[in-house]
Image 1 (spheres, rainbow, N blue to C red):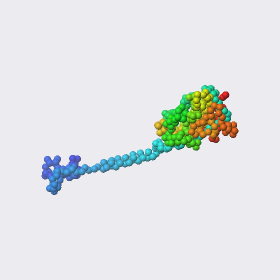
Image 2 (cartoon, rainbow, N blue to C red):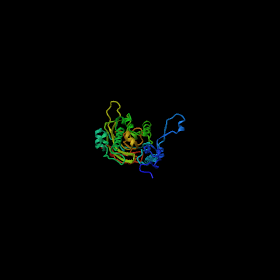
Image 3 (cartoon, rainbow, N blue to C red):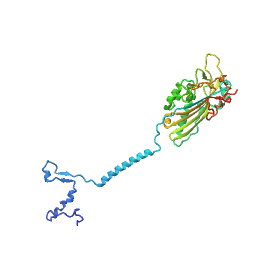
Image 4 (cartoon, rainbow, N blue to C red):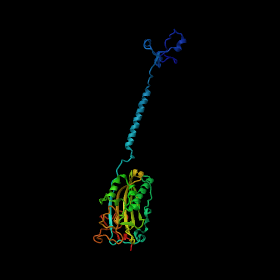
Length: 361
């Protein structure tokens, strides 16, 4: 049996006839096999000149190959997990969905008698708009808060864009006079710009291409503002309609003091009030909020006093002080009050203007 200090395969024979002084430099066969350097044999040294020794390849341990296999398995596992989580993740970026066309409803409101005339201040004071605020001050943002998927700042952004659109499309003097549409157009979703441009350039009363569904404007050859500050009152409401969509509903009444367009140096004609009730349903996705724009889903407009037969698709056609609607009093449709909020109360293409909506005499 090998002793504690003997080689692994037992004690090597004594090459020196038992002389112990060479025992420390004699190597057994197991030691030689384990050596990294190996001397060439005599036959190998007779060949081409070479080094006296050669390196033997290191013996690969089984533990090294096992670690490599384990590393590959871990990489595959991580890759598979990433793919699985990507498929299962409920917060994937929303797919690009084009905005739908704006749906427009126009209802002219015909007076049952002559349109009341007078000075703008007196007309406002004797009308339901007496307590309304002037211009943009009448469009107030509601109390806000976060929704399930939108922060409070995003909700405020949506409401602010909606207000800006109402101001640009209902109160901007150059828009009202038909001189430009740019302030409103800048806030429209790009997917709807083709419809917007066609509505402005070639208006049609087809529920899709009426310019009056996008904005309030008058024919400058017919009417002019008698007071630069329309009176406004209404509400803005918001609601989350999906994980990536936020809706805002605007319900506002705008009252304008108008007079006939100036013609010559004659006396200034009396003013009269013209009321427009606009209900607009806006939709915002996250890209709309980032780019500061809006998609308009529906626009319902009631406006008067106007004649039922007037083409109001391109611009509104107010009846001015002292004028009457043709055929008024014969077969009038249901009475409609443009100062009443909520959904339009008429289903016909024309309504009768509630006498209470005009200034009192």
